[in-house]
Image 1 (cartoon, one colour):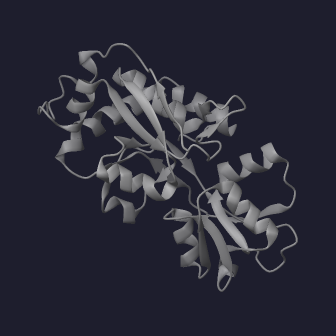
Image 2 (cartoon, rainbow, N blue to C red; image 1 turned 90 degrees about the vertical axis):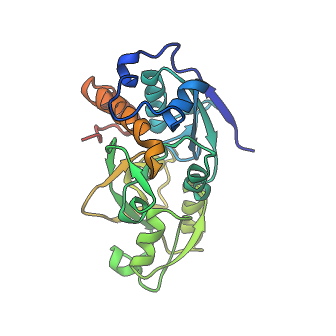
Length: 263
């Protein structure tokens, strides 16, 4: 069963942060409701290292966890983390189960039809991973007619399909690696940061990266389209801007990725 963890981000919120915004002080919008309740629910997977995972003491940590905490601190509200499968996170966001989803969500044209996105808070590339003794797949172009394993509804699943692969939907990075190593699928596609972290932390020598996308993906925070979320998005972007300018984002990136991937 997924854990629900509450993190107290800060005790007070200054009016100068967003209380005097000219874009709207409309009573009852999403930001106003969050302010009134004093808390914000953030949906994430909880098993996608180094974005969000449980450490040896079962504490929820990771890049996205710390980004969320810092946003909460700057908004002066309590953050409640709710863990769930990737396949249900954006659906839960639309349904109002979560106020935000902060889970390495790539900004792409399909998602922009339903969601507005914050300014990017990191950049990453997708990599193609195969079993070490695989000699047939050396690039994304070699995926035609092959099988891949990827998170259901993810950009990586779509990328595999675009290259002609038959995609098996799974719910975790570890599961994709198991399927590749056992030969049940030919390959997997995932974030470069996650794959490199997996190799470094597990010492797994049975897999290898054979290709990566040329352009880096932009990672942002989605909100359902509509005026209800306008002031909340402004507040999120303000918080991210402050985190970028004071070095917080770069510091968190170095901590979890070993490099500044925020610009």
